[in-house]
Image (cartoon, rainbow, N blue to C red; front, side):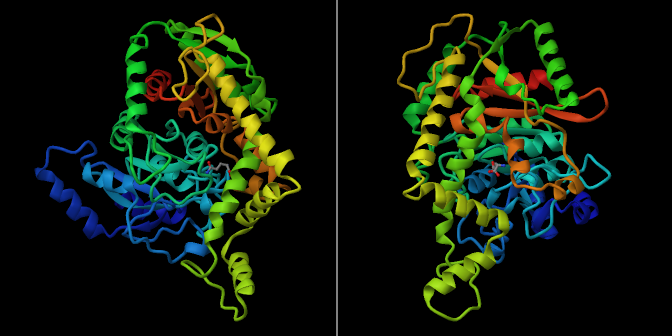
Length: 463
Ligand code: GLN
């Protein structure tokens, strides 16, 4: 708490805090307890996760004063397991962004830098809070990279589990076919503990995968090779994009060399559809967002414009005043791509490309995708257990450089390495690796759907 008091004013990582009394009372009540997976761990939640305490603002004027009448399922699970909440974290408005500059609270800062640098987005406050030791674990959401990129920029671990494992009930929707709750921590052990607590079926979330599928995944995982046997690590050619900086390339290379020295086998693999993943994501995610954000109409809850007039005027004004520029841009983009003129060429086409991206992953992984109906790939020399790539093309940019950018596309391109795993719904993690010049680079490990535990194992080896 002292740490928060001394650093948060500058870092703007947390935007609402629970009272010191409440936190201390909860901590001292735990002293007689011996159970609870997260006993005494301090936890921060991204501000798009509903809590009955504090506000759930999504860093938007639209929900600035919104108080949720219920907790998200994951919030109750953490409380049952004796985690202690400290507050809610800053974020890009409605989780749309890459640098966390789109927030009514002002951008959170990256604690790794003296000058003002981006935390990455959209779960920037969550990453900054963990990196500055304000808490042990934070939760973010990852739709196209929003947990992994901030973790990479802030030098901490960011884990996006397989889609559908963690309940999204009570998590404000951005793009529901991609939205995944993710875990940020400094220690892999803490990531594991949190994942264990959150990884279960929730009847309230229609996208939460069933218990029968969970047991199929477990059976498959039990049949996988035991720990220690050399693993086949894939290096996907298409992730070696032109924009990779020298420091990132070095860190990637040294990670691969270490894995080889530890006895694992390295293979170059090719996934041609990856080149189209970024535009595909930026068609699908805004389309879903446009539909999800239609509920903020000034009538039911949240911000309402002062304007008098008929409901169309009220609706338009409320949305123009309540949403920031990036959110408005996504709504326009999404509605355009869903309009009759663009639907077939854009939206439907993007769905096809998404399928191809999924098939490319299924083709390179030796393990079968439990969601797929196509035959098991033969275990030939082209299949691998994991893919290891960088998570971002460079280290965190300065806020000055970000504000000098001319086009929103300059931010979108930074998602190029994270969106493929989002489109495929597979587990992906960013782990910090020290570069020779003292900076920290995020290295990404991706595995087959449901292979989350082994992804965490490899992540631990890389750190
Ligand atoms: N940067 C991406 C976007 O703005 C990803 C956001 C996210 O994962 N929430 O859409």
